Length: 331
Picture (cartoon, rainbow, N blue to C red):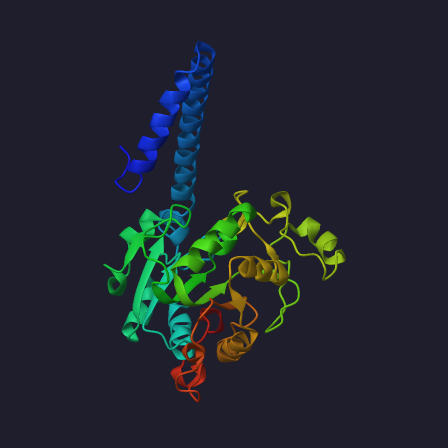
């Protein structure tokens, strides 16, 4: 049954179809055939959607987050985490970075996994929420995020109103989308964002605000020379057949869009965002003591009307050094 919102439009369309059907027997036959084709297409679309959801559940289920793995070992060439916890996810560093550099009251972490960043931000006084595609992740939310994370899908529409959040974050998430779906995802992020978007995305090429990106670990080893030879003007995205795969033959970490800083910046601009390289430089300087600057490809984007005061740093003299926060690999 149509919802109350759409019922007038549906009723009007139904009356119009009835009028058309009375024109002739030939019109009715065409409508009958068209109806069968539309029904078949809808059923095939539903089947594909179910298959995609099954793929998502398989890719980002328990094994992706380390369930059943030897947490003392490495990934053994597999995608996902040998273990996934607050330390391995660098949530304390990311949470401090966001708290220090964004003077906001609330935030939304899209692709929050089990909610470690949500937990850290809430501990620091920000009204943080989170969402993720993975039911497993939400079912295993960290205690400080329980009740503040939910399953949600960018393409189905996030369950929040326009410009609800002063800060929206998407950490190592957008590269998991196929290139043709990126514009729709960014449009939905822009809808719920009433200030700034902070994203980290594996990228290659020149970076105006921090360390340049690279192809290593993103492209199949036998194709690296080819991509290096393309020069700095190559924007990407890298075709799927050239993307790196893990020991099981799956795309590394499920990454589908590997593109340049320039390509991503243009996609953000198309969605109405303005990149903030000055803020990005400050963030790179903040994470340098933790050894993360070469690994986090940072994007800070403003929506129209974003408050400049929201990106004035708190405690400008504070650093990660005095907090004792470091990348786990530097321990």
